[in-house]
Length: 175
Image 1: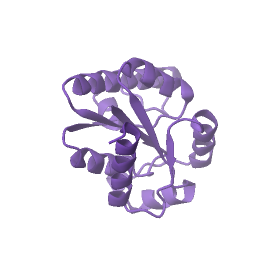
Image 2: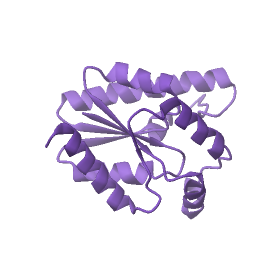
Image 3: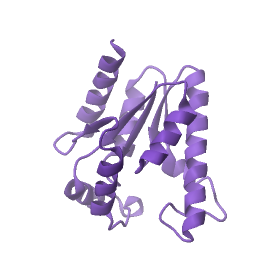
């Protein structure tokens, strides 16, 4: 199974996916931010300009994440993807590209206020200057509200969150 962990900036994706991957017997953590930064010259961030180039590079990152996930899954590792997937179109792309491997979506949803606060706790070089929390939250709920497991992690530690994700994965697989 491929585990896709998404959520707003500072929802806890990076911390939680590191913990989940470390707790599984054979796992690979695939960080969408890291994959997108493989473009060194000509890089345009997901929210950058020109918008058409930003969209092209997001699509390239999505393809690369799926290819890596497929390779790791085929080698017997559980891929754990960490990436913001805000739309049904993007999720459908992942599911189709990962097929026939099953994909499980987990949306970390601690709420916009918690995400804002957590972002202030990050080291300066790790902070993400983002003022679109409400719009992104509304888009994700509208687009993905019926997809995957929406997990309110506001009151949980990253360790507790990782443990619950692993337990949920075992329950879904019946073991």
